[in-house]
Image (cartoon, rainbow, N blue to C red; front, side, top):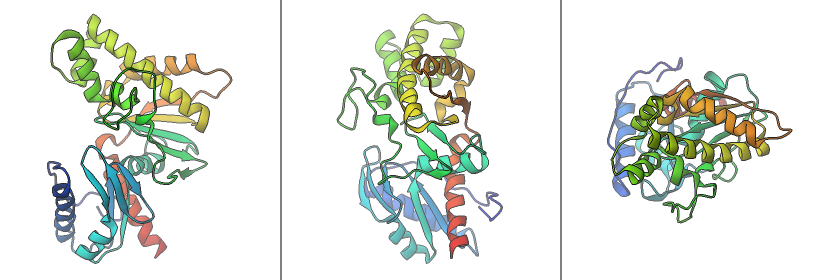
Length: 277
């Protein structure tokens, strides 16, 4: 994208695993830079645990990489300055500066899709921690469900898109998707309504706890599940309300940038690099 954040080129690739995924990222970045004569910087948003300071992707269970020095690899490939960070924090940057959390000094941006995580903005600053901040998907919510991380009862294991579909299939014997479950909820189908109610309760547990800790003014729901709109936001706001006492109630809304938030945030990081040089 250009300095006005207008997209100038798009490349989409399937996501392989392990070393093939690393090669795919490097090849895609190289292709995009080649399509953009005069490119000045690269912003890269990747999933998993990321060390923003060193530009190393420390670990991703879903993709299967560990300790990948993306900043160094991309600098070597392109000769450009590179910003690397977590994809959810990139989305949080986009929503904070330009989207649904704009104007809020304290916010949570929570994409709910294949996985669940949160970007936390506290006093106007994106909270990175030691690279692990915002891993709300691996907060235990008391469910009896194994998680790919090795834990049991993680939010992601029961409330992510695939988890919703899996729980509905287990209950009914019918394979489906989270979007289809949401559509059935709107029609009042009993099994879908039951699965949805459990999902809302688990999300409410985690987001109420996050509210007590971080006191966000707004919680922005992104990812595929945000397409459910008020079907999710209404009962989720009520659930959070019921779990809080004297705490300030956050406003719930859906993300402005949907599944492009990470790209926009990575572009903003690249611009930040140029402004500090």
